[in-house]
Length: 259
Image 1 (cartoon, rainbow, N blue to C red):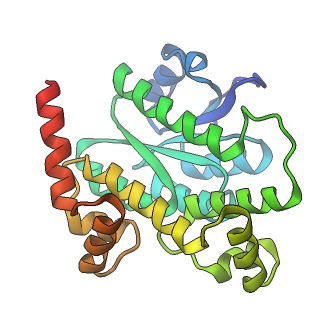
Image 2 (cartoon, rainbow, N blue to C red):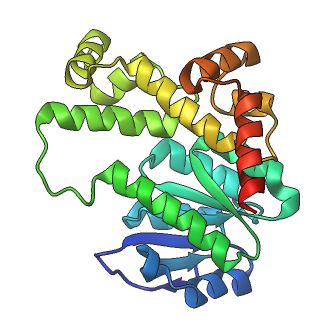
């Protein structure tokens, strides 16, 4: 483990994990993280050390390389997803590692940055992820929530992290409540079913992935939890009012017009 930088409590705490000292130290020292709401508390050289750090320190985000000795980024993401699901993960990826970056989505990885990490790309990714963390932890909302509101928040945070394979039984086990009670409480407080929220999260993630030309439609389908592409297409059209192909064509056309 290389360096511990201390804490700045008003910012989200993050660590940078990369076996290349030049990259991890360069990212830590030469990017204005505080301007985007983050503070690098440590730079670490492999996934095993990162996992040990997380077990003894509270952080909100891990920026990690994929290919590393001892424990790589995929295994680190898997362990964090299983034991520390509240931590957000972003991958550092080389062009040849794109299929690994895609693999990380099933473990809750929020985004990826191509090495060595250009300023504009880092800015865009971390601005977007900060909004997600703000929403997940309600950091901007100082109003105390009721018991039932906290349960709803817990349900929705869990779904956001596990949308590819979430079940009502999983949620009930996390809350230590019966499935019927969880289902009825959520419907009473939101006016929607839990399955409706799962679909919402999946469809919004699908729309995000479809704007990335690296993904084929069937890969998007598999990534968000649909084994049958036809079911995915039908649900996507019901939610967005157009097929994935039509959605992608429209978005790509809009981008070309902007350019």
